[in-house]
Length: 99
Image 1 (cartoon, one colour):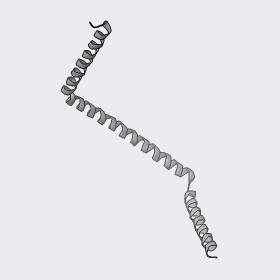
Image 2 (image 1 turned 90 degrees about the vertical axis):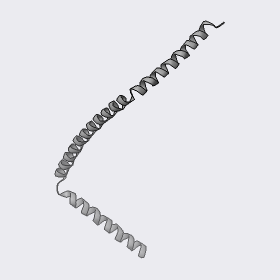
Image 3 (image 1 turned 180 degrees about the horizontal axis):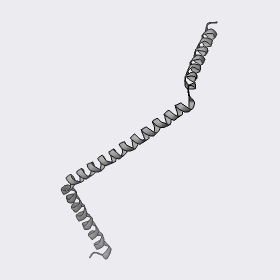
Image 4 (image 1 turned 45 degrees about the vertical axis):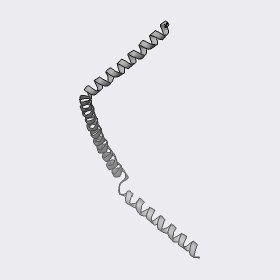
């Protein structure tokens, strides 16, 4: 004779099995609609991300432009100074290695 606990466990297993079968059947019947829904939502998400990236790009360009205006023409002198320092370092290194 089965106890009350064993009976409940078997009903649980039967219920889980029937639920899994029902879920698979409903998923198979509705998978085309589900794929279309997912595709539509992903396209909307991509469009939103592209819009936000465009806004971010525009604001970054504006910030860079204002930064260049703030720095002014001294930006080129920094590049020239850096190149002069590199050249002096290389010449000093050549002198130390050769002599």
